[in-house]
Image 1 (spheres, rainbow, N blue to C red):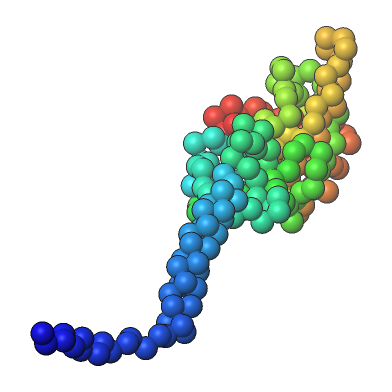
Image 2: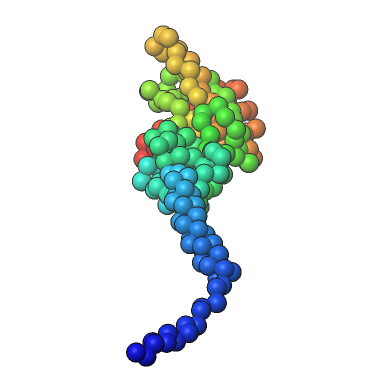
Length: 207
């Protein structure tokens, strides 16, 4: 009986380096996926401005939209604050597409944009509209006293912002108001206000 001879088999050379590389690639891919998921979780909803908002004007709700960004540590105004932001004023002109930061807006009594100044007015009945409130837009008008050389009224500021109003306790009393105007005309407004020659007109269409 002929003995069967087994042919020698060729052993495959082991390549531990390739195996290790494959494991590293798998682990690296899994780690990259995990980081992407974690970073996606870190993104926050902030406010993006869709319309130009001039300095000293409020932020309309229709001029804001939601945007997702990586959390930079509280620099941007969160989307959840949009109602509060709509009652604030722009410190500077904000262009469309800008992500709104907390430093871009101010409430009444806060910092002003460059070129703006606050002027205090003591207004008597007939010089101020009823129920004037902070945040209203008004015209500031110089109304000369009767018999003065300047017989015609003069528009000093076409769209001033009311910063604060002190409502009198008694009807017919003087109303104390502070308005924000261009700093170039602030001294003139203050001078006429001190002599009682200032009147303001409410502009409800610009609120």
